Image 1 (tube, rainbow, N blue to C red):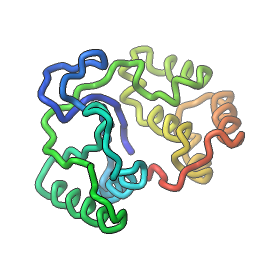
Image 2 (image 1 turned 90 degrees about the horizontal axis):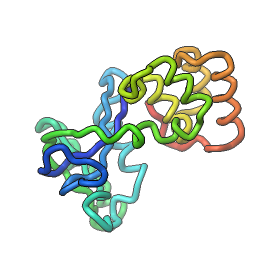
Image 3 (image 1 turned 180 degrees about the horizontal axis):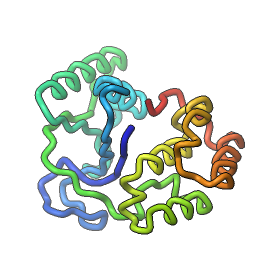
Amino acid sequence: MVRTRVGYAGGTKKDPTYRSLGDHTETLQIDYDPSVISFEGLLDIFWKSHDPTSRPWSRQYRSIILYHNEEQKRLAMESRDRQAVLQKKPITTEILPFSAFYLAEDYHQKYRLQQEEEIMREFESMYPICKGVTDSTAAARVNGFLGGYGSPDDLKKEIGLLGLSEQGKKRLIQILSSGRPAFRACPLK
């Protein structure tokens, strides 16, 4: 991943906010390097990360894939159809054309990272403006590791690239070694 950001998309209201969402859905925007992971690879992670057969209790939390071109639309629809066969139930995920993405408020960004004050302080010193943390590849990776994504081997390879102090590296390793959270089956790359 190059960057992840949370926000709102899939609706028509201009400039939605968490308190005034209109017809948008809470979404995750992913900027990625296709030489590292394909769109199909992202779709695989998407399907494994939630139950695409459950009905959302509101439009805010529906399952959607927003495509940017006809190839992405085709791949998304094919992957949805494969899921329907695997799940043996109707898939409720909607596949829609991308129109706009509205960045969520700062307090929604990098949620897991914000729960670890010591490490978050390090990112805040690197990026004194909140947008810097939101747009940071390193912050996205640390947030993913804290959320249980990636493997211990990934962490070993990447820890020197995250910009953390020696104390910050030790703290991240300590958190992840404590078994909280367990690494999940679908890695970030």
